[in-house]
Every structure is written in structure tokens, then in C-alpha cells.
View 1 (cartoon, rainbow, N blue to C red):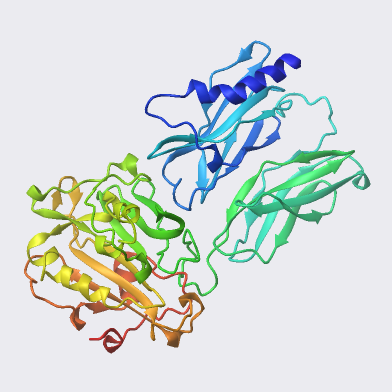
View 2 (spheres, rainbow, N blue to C red):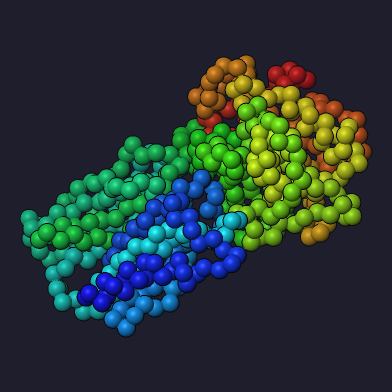
Length: 492
């Protein structure tokens, strides 16, 4: 055992050396909590909270590495398959391990600055539940499930078998938000069978993890850990019950699940990690952003100027976002404009991520006095102290035209939401319908509209835009008047 302990200590430091290279930064442990391990037989649930802002880890190469430690020495580090990201927390399930064996584990993330990783932790597996159990009276669990999940409630269920008098042990469900460290407990009656409990008072659009636990003769036993995600608040604007990644962000559309095609990134300001910059839905099939959502406020303006440093989005780098070249006849058009993010050089650099760039005709459209350029300048005049919330998107009436691998949008649009008075000091989420106004502007992508200013013919309701695009806009603002608009509210 003393040798095992020594090897564990070696394992907890060796990885920093074994993975070091000239182009990789293997530090950054201050950005990670120490990984937690929940062991059930030879299966281990891994979890590691981080200090990265929401969206930083989404789509990045992040997860866990582990190595076995035995009397013969320490094995090679391997990557845990299928690690997942929920906000700023990493999690994974590691199964098929050796019985009654020590392991060391690290969390890591490959970001634009190189590899960053946590401090190491250790765990020891138990005897496999698939082998004959030396204690035939040990509790056994089914697979936990969550039923009837709403914005604030869920019913947990799990099978349980234990042939002991019910007075000798206790049962409980444990649950917590994935971002939290400690569990809340709900007791259930002892005895074999399917155990259920209904939870209420949950937070909307939040991921929870849960398990069934038994206490017997001073020992704790637990089922596998499962997860569920609550829906958006009732009246949240999404009739399908879909979710936005962050329910407090008024500008976010509901994510549409198109595996292998739609990818999402949520960027916090590079110079202020608690302030969001913009969010993007990117289509791998079209090699083009579908929408970019952002709050528009004077606090994002400064003196940094334009940096023109076009580069791959670090979250979506694996997709190889297409870079339109001028020789194709199209210019690199920002959805969120460079002039809208000049508070710092770092923040301006983010809007030059290629995930925020779409192909746009220059003459008559994206140049000075072009219809899209005119609309951008017009919307800049709509910013208000209460914040204007904007979604800028691409629409494809057909897919007939491509350039550099990108399917060229046939239309561009802007979806807008703000308070009517603009300076109420109220958050739009808390406003009544009569206090809000929203509208969409949509323009055809062609070169024949030079000198065309924004006008009523470009305006449609948000509801109509939702029908066209299949997206749900402003889902986090319950009273947004998406079915109507008044041109005079927007100065037209």
C-alpha cells in the first residue's frame, strides 16, 4: 500500500511533465476545481467545475485524462471518451475499469492559448457488479429516469431491490444543479420496487443531476447518476417547450437541434469574462452563420477601433469556418458589426471570428449607401439606455449559389426588441406587453437596392420571421409582442 501511495503521488505530478511541449501551455490549474469522482463498481462518474465563462468550453476539445496505478507502476494516460460540457462544468462516465484499482484523473481544455488542465485527483474502483457479489444482500439499483419534466418540476424514478427488513435501511433521492457541489435529499419509503419522488420549485432552463441512494449499516450505496433539463418558463415564448442556453439572455433564440449541421457558441467578452459579447448558430452544411445574437448598448463602445484580424472561432475551430474571398464577388460581411464592439481591442477581435462573417455583395448592398449598410446605420440609431436586443441572421430561399464552399444567403434580417420608452431602467424580461416593442427587418440579398433606406416594406412581425426561419426568437421575454409591430414606434 505504501508503494501504491507513492506511485499515486507520482501520478499526480507526472502528467504535467509528460504532456509538456514547446507549443502547449499545460498550466492553468487555477481555472479548474479538483475533479470529483463517484465510484459505482467499475464505473466512475467524473465531474469538474471550472471558472471559464459560459460558452468558452462548448465545442472545444475538453474532457478528462486518466491512468491506472498499480504495484507494477503507473500506466499511460488515456482520454476519457464522450466527455460533455454543461456551461462551465465538465462531466463524463468512465466504465469498464479494472476492479479494486487506483486511478489518477485530470480535467483539461484545449483553448486558443494551448492546453490548460486541473490539478489531479485519485479514486479507487470497487468490485464489479457484473461478477458474483460476495454479499448477496447488497442493494441493487435500476436505471434512474426523469419524467414529466416542466420548467419548475420533475418526477424522478428508479428501480430498487434489497432483501432486508425495511427497518434496517433508508432510501433517498439526491439531486443538484450541475453547477452546484452539494446535493438536496428527498427521502422515499424503504422496500423493493420502483421508487419515485416529485420535485417542485426547480429553476427553468437548468440541468440537474440525480441518483437514488441507500444507507445500510453505516455504508452508502448509490445508483448511476442521470441528468435532466427543465424547460423554459411558462409563457417564455417558445410553444414547443425548447430551451435557450442561458435563460437570462433576452436576445437568445431557442437552439434548434440539427446534429452534424448546427453548432452553437456563446462568447463572453475577452476582456471581461462576466459580460457577454455575442452568441452564434453556425451551419456546417452551409458553411455560414445562421444567426448572431447580441445585446446592443453604449457600454460596448470605446476607442479600440477596427483590428481586421479575421480568424477561426476558437469554439468552432474544428468546423473550419469558410473565409469568403473578394475574388468570388462577395465581401466578408459582419453580422455583429465591428463598430458595435470597440470597448477594447480584445472584444473587437472577437467579432472578426469567421463564425460572425457571412458572404455579402459589396456593390449596392454592404458598401456605403447599400441597402444593408443603410439598415445597419439605422439600427445603430435605435440603441437605448435599457438595451436593444438584436438577432442578425441569414435566410435561404434557395441554395442555388455557392462561393468558396459557402451557400450564399438570399436574404438577411435583423430581429429587434427593446422597451418602448428606452430609458425605463427595467429589464425587458420583467416588462409587460404594453411596455415592449419588437420587429424584424428583412432585405433581399442583391445589388439593385443602392440608396434604399429602411422602410415599412422591409418590416415584418417576429412571429412571421419565426414562420419563415423555424427559429423561436426572444423566448426568454414572456411578454414580447411578437405578433404585431407599429412602424411609427421605430421612426417609420
